Length: 159
Image (cartoon, rainbow, N blue to C red; front, side, top):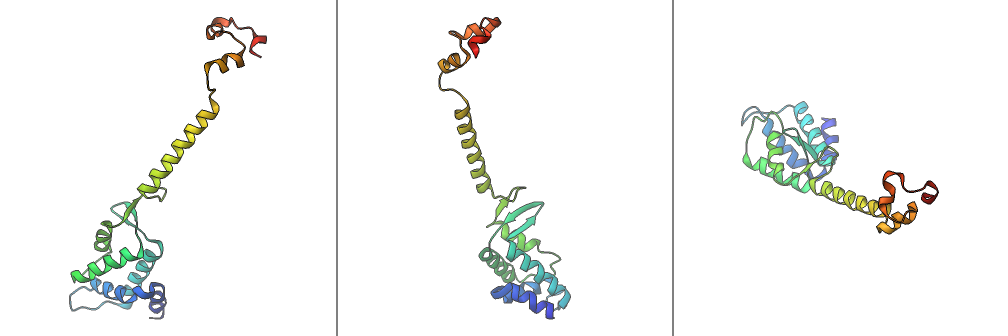
């Protein structure tokens, strides 16, 4: 019970709703839940509130405490029981959550990262390439590009 109280402090203002949510894990509508099971549920909820990340159907999602609270209220209002896991809660959370990539980025963040990479690549190419063909000829010491074919350009001309 002491551990349960400690986890309850981590849940803060969400504690009462977490208590109500844990009741959905009863075996029967009028059944009870053990302190050990409630402790496990509270730990899992505290982790969800702290990280804001959960997995469902092999995919990772990110959410925030206000959305978790709304989902918990929805689950509690459904007045269901005999839950074996948090999948019902997660399914409710899916509606308002953002999918994460393998790197832990949302689709929007990943899109921004890709755009930044494209801009950098474009800037790098512009820095590496000369502005005009005349610059290349001057650098290589030839009058015509065709002088480069067949070894017509002299080594000393190319610098």
